[in-house]
Image (tube, rainbow, N blue to C red):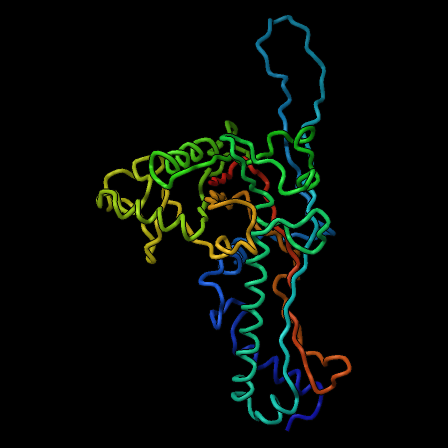
Length: 364
């Protein structure tokens, strides 16, 4: 018989161990897919850090000291200021699930019965957390908002003009503490506007953008020396992805389902050389085109119209506070409700983009 505080804690903790590690479980969900908790927040994708906030050094300019000179020409003396610093605050998310001593413990004797009570409560809480994270990941917080993270549209901003014109998000006058005029004028993503989802319009602009954002460094010991498109994904809404699928279905079967299969960086030779995911996802230059349900919800996503985001996840990723990554605590008595117990799941994080120029967005 369970009678003591420690016994309740041990029973629930023992039950949780049988539920597996903290992960997303697809039960009673409102969205068809969860890109954030399903992929972005996987431990092999997350970067962990400590401190009171996230700081990253940004080399935003060159020294401009290179020149062709005469052998006896006098050397110039200059020590240029090359660096700026990104400053991003931590944001905190939490969810909780509860159980009642009488109905959930005493009336459900034995670990297996408690398991059946705990599992759906915990799963529902995790799905609720997944939906909260998903909504905020595709949103731009207001200037005065001190609780929401810097979602993807905060970092990758649309513009009607073609080129590196992705400036400030919403009503913000700086981005991560930087003035784009004086501090880092190069810290802008690629943008373009399209009218039709077809090869002469959108696909052609995506091909151009793919070339423009493919920065490679001339020196080996540099971030740009990595593969420029090692982890890129294309995100869009249902209307646009449906039209892109129509293009894929109508083209020559030998080209497979890659909308730019004959371009540089994609193997030639027909469908056998084109890698398509098991789920049949349409591809652009071997990068999956992912439908994001939140981009259809105008109460959540207001940044662009029919957006197509080309995101390099080597440059855009979540930063999590070490020790507070989906941390699930022990059961605690609810204050002033001594028969109720509650378990909290906490997350301290924010999103960071270290190089906006290697990302693009297209809008109608």
